[in-house]
Every structure is written in C-alpha cells, then in structure tokens.
Image (tube, rainbow, N blue to C red; front, side, top):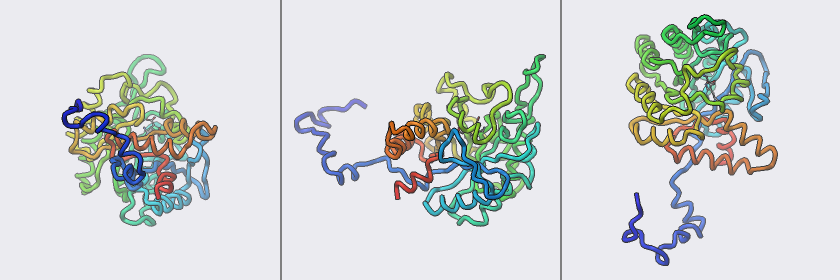
Length: 341
Ligand code: PBG
C-alpha cells in the first residue's frame, strides 16, 4: 500500500494538518466510532440478597446477587449498552460443576430474572464454561492422565456432553446467546447439535475461538472464584507463543462447526490476531474481549493519577475496534456509555 506521490502529491501542496485544524473536519473524517450498543458488559452473579460485593482486583466491579444484578442491568439498558454476559459464582462447587447444569442453578435463575425486566433489544448472553462451578477450578470433567497426584487433565469428550447440558439449561431459561469459553475441541458442533435437536436452532453461538492461556485473566479469577486448584489451563487454552496461523485454524474449525460470531481474547496483547481474523473471516462478526487484567492495569494507573482514565479507555477501545472487532466485551461498557452520551 505504498503511497504514490503522483496520486497523493507532496509537500507543500500536500499538508495533512489541513484535516486537523478544525474540530468539525476532524470529526467528519473519523472512521472508528465507538457505539455502546456494540459493547457487552460481563457481570458476576452470586447467591444472596442485596449483595454487591466489591472485587478487590477490579475496582468498580462487583459480585452481585440476582436482585442487585437486575438493578445493574436495568441501568446498562438505560445507558444504551448492547447486552450483558453472565458469569455464575455458585454457592457449592463439585467435581463436574453441577450448579451450571441445573435449571435451578445461579445462572439459570439470573437469566430468568433478567429476561423478565429487560426490553427485547437488550441481550442477555451467558458465558459457557465450568471453571467457576467445579471444585478443582478446571474448565470441564477431569480424567487421570499419568501416575502422579497432579496428573489430571480435562477430558475433552466427556466435557462436551456436559457443555450441551449447561447450554440447554441456559436456553430453557431464555438466554439470547451463548458464549462457550472452555476451548474444548468440538464444543461448537456439540452445542449446535444439542440446540438444534431441542428446537433452539435460533439461538446464536458466540465462540471464544482464539482464546489464549493468558496471565491477563488474573483479576477475573478472583472475581469468578475460578482459579485452577492445581496446574494451569495450557492443555486447552492457546499458547501465547504459538503461530498466528494456529489461531486462524481454531477459528476455521469453529466456523465449520457452526459458530455465528467469533472472538479473540484477550484483546490488547492480541490485536494482530484480531486484525488477521477480520481479514481472513470477513463473513462473520468478530468480537474481542478486553479482559480483566487490561481493565485492572488501566484502573490502577488511573487511581494513582498517572493517566486520564476516560481518555485512555476510549483510546484503548478505539484501538480494538480499529483492529477489526465490531463487538467489544468490556468491564467499562457502563462508564463508556455514559461518557459517549
Ligand atoms: C472462563 C473464562 C475466563 C475468562 C472468561 N471466561 C477465565 C479463564 O479462562 O481462566 C477471563 C475473562 C477476564 O479475564 O476478564 N473460562
């Protein structure tokens, strides 16, 4: 894309600053425009009444009981945010994550409560995973894979059956869209088939297609109480140092399996992957998840007075959109909707 001086001219006829003097001209020539209805606000829901428990590693974010969640979501809707994505923090955890597969589980009840109050334009999305619901903190059913005490790993295919159960619970509760984040092979095909067989063929799947085993999830694991009790997630989430082509392969598989929206996560350290996904899969809407660590780092600097939070956040979200993501999942959705109003 070299600029041909024959076409673009050269100084002094060419003066790029001419487009920058007048604020109206700057506005007119903008291309990346943030819009709150393309933001999704992740929220954490837990048991109790009147609970609004601050998450210490994520100032300004809370674990909410269902009644408080309803108030929060009504406010998001009022501000024009596109939707929320729910993460459940159950009271009791077990080996398989039963709470998430029960019609009476925390997320199922939260979805039903929300769908009673929100208008039909506002999206109630559910994250689909097991790490918040299992006592071991891994994203599925475990199976022994060696002799040692810590030689357990997530059993891919056994987990698929449970993912179908979890998503059917969410579908029956009235969820508008599901977002599987566990990085199991074949998860999109399994969920799609489960939905279609049960008559939920209209519910879209937003897949966390290229999700990296990132250290930027640290604060989230406090928020969702989902840190693995042993080991790490490197046998299922992507290696940050792997080839960008590996991310394209993950996305291609999800597209073949029936994903409706694809996602790259985290956003900022992987903007090259966002751009590549946008270029290689122009037929699908692309989302990026501006994750907890990205939020907390900026928040910490802002609280210290080192940066201007509002301007840094807007510039950050702008960069994610410019890289190619039209849908942004961000803990700033509520604030930004207010700033842009
Ligand atoms: C669940 C899940 C995680 C995040 C979203 N879904 C944590 C993880 O994979 O450990 C992270 C979100 C964030 O950091 O904001 N698998």
